[in-house]
Structure formats: structure tokens, C-alpha cells
Length: 396
Image (cartoon, rainbow, N blue to C red):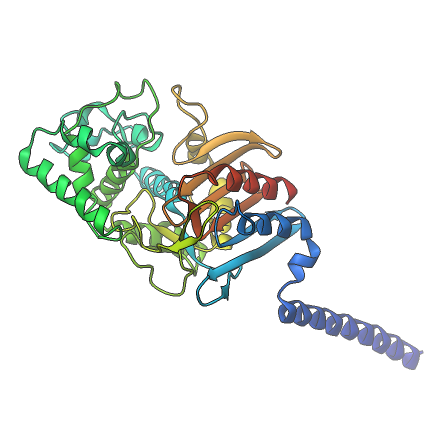
């Protein structure tokens, strides 16, 4: 009897070892070929491929990460560097551009949870004397774009008109020189405070809280408030509140010019023609509105952690998901819409040489991140990459 028992145990143990060996060999095989995810989800790979090929391509390269209850998938397509023929990798680090706004809103929300500030504090409470209307705008209104403040895109689209309305001759001359310098050297680095001062010298579009107007300068202001309330630089707040707790190894705050570490080349894509390298174009003045660099998987990890209440309590997440009366589709740093997964956080980002789009269901069960190292010069590709993101998200 004893021998039979030992034999049985040994046989069961052998089968267990065989299963372990088989599993290890499977993992090694997946790591070796690197394209197993593509074979498993060719539909997702085709969505990426379509963005980087043909006369209507959006960018030279793309990377994506999607996850749902049944598992996750990451993939890439096209080129990280066209000249050197370096292929895009799934773990490539790219600029999030305006998708960074949810990072900044999360930092402010965390500071509110820590009682460092209140989202209903006025701008004047933290930046006294900077804005003539600072006592009429709250932090919440900065974050949901109902402050009425001008956007830097408003100024860049019609600089003569807007700069002509600034009565401070010294400030106006500084801004005129900046516009001329940026036209000649798009990667020129400058302090975001100059744009904040420009906004302070111009009137509001409307009474705060009564309407919606997207404002990057509003987010630059919010970032400045975060620093004043906490007493530490914004980069440290991103690290303490988001990057280190979630172990986001690829993530960094890179608000000015060159990106430290390995990253793809960014491109301006002229439809029907060629792509031009412009990695640092218009990156010299990025701040709290668009300065985060990360890869697709780490961005997805952040999104899921946020909605699941692992960065700020769920009660605060509910606040962040609540749109304003002026625009129910935009909460604090995030779009809010109904998709295949129900209530969903969404956001897009676009600079001259980078595009990004993200979505996460309100319960964190489904997420998708799409990052591209280019953008069409006439913005004609924006609709294509946002549609592709929702396709990836719903197919996950």
C-alpha cells in the first residue's frame, strides 16, 4: 500500500512538473517571438497598421495597449525613426500632450483630499494679485474649462489681434518677440508664466462657470496653484502622487524641449506628401497642460488605478467624473461620455508631432491607450486616431 501511494504521488508530481515546464516553454516562446499578441488579436493590429500606412496615414508609428476582464494586448506598428528605419516598439515612450491634463487634475484632487487646498478655492486665494479677476475663478473651474480664460491656441491663431489688446507695452513686446522666435525656432524654450501673464492682461470670454472654453493656460495656472499649495515643484507632485506609488517606470514630467531617455522621433505629417521630423516643436513651453511622457501600458495602469480609487478615494473620482452645467461631457481633466462600456473617461492630445487618445470605463474593467509619433499638419488625421482608439477600446 505504501509503495502504491508513493507511486501515485510521484506520478501526480511528474504531471505537475510537466505542466510547469510546458508553461515556462510557452512563456519563453511568447517572449522570443514578440509578435504573439498580434497573432492573438489581428483585428487590433490591423487597426494600428491602418494609422501608419497609405496616403492618409496619421503618423509614421503607433503603439497601443488595451485591457479588459479577459486579458490585455499591446502592439505597435510603423516606424519610431523613419530615417534610421527603427521600428516602433509597444513599450515606446511618447508625449501625452493634453492627455496630461488628467494627471494634473488628479494631483489637485489629491491635494484636496490631503486638505492642502479646496477645489472651490479661488485663484486669488493662491495667486493673489496675479489676475484682476482671480477672485471670480475657482480651481474647479480651471479644471473643467469653465473659467472663461483665454487659451494659448486662441493667441497663436490670431497673435496680432490678441497681442494688440494687451495694454502693458513691456509685456506686449515680450510676447511679440516670443511669437517671432517660435516662428523661427519652434523648439525654443520659454517660461509658461509668460502665457499666464498674457491671460491675466486679457479679458475673460464669459463670467466664470457660465460657459465652456478649453484653456491650456487655465491648466498652467492650476499647476502653479498646486506648487504654491504643496510647497514643492509639480514634477515632485507627479512622482509622489502617481509615478512612484504605481511604479510607472516609463513615466516622467518633461515640460520643456527634449525628452530624456530613449524615445521615438516625432513627426509633422503633411497629407499626401512626407513626414518631417519635429520632435521638440512647440514643446518649449509645455507645462501642467501637456508635459507628461510615458508608454501606453503605464498610462493605462494610471487610468485604471484612478477610477478604481487607488489614487484618490472613489468619492473624489465621482467628483472628477461629474461634468459641469456648462458642459456635462467634461469633468475635471477628462471627457466623460457613454461608450460600449457605459460611462467612460476619455481624452485626446495633439501637438505638432505627437497624438494620443485614451479611454477607461468608470469601473476600470476596460481601458485603451493609443499613442502616435506624429500628427497631420492640417489636423485631418485627428478624427481617424480618435475613432481608432474607440475601436480598440470596444474590441478589447
